[in-house]
Length: 122
Image (cartoon, helix red, strand yellow):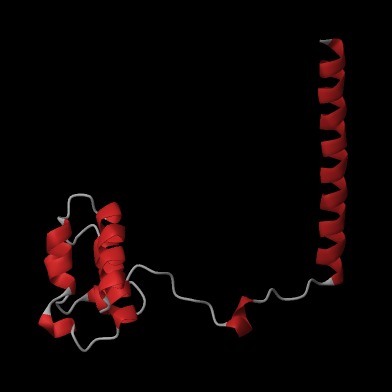
């Protein structure tokens, strides 16, 4: 890992986990097992470790664990795009939605007039 990136990452991790010692973070990032690992992967793993409340020290960074997973264990499962789009509304559903929107606009207009009358009377 380039030294400038390592030092910037140390600063970020200290901000994320103030209880972690900068020298300990630096030592973890300089671990020989990480020498051949892509620095982007190391950066992401280090940040994941720092944001995991169960991790007690930066010494875990070079060790195997969930912080090396691409997606954190508690992340929501992404919805495939083909299922994400809402189904089109039927004519009855569209009419009901239009009626509800009209009632909402009327209620909003009534609320505005009440607020305006209160402001004028003050």
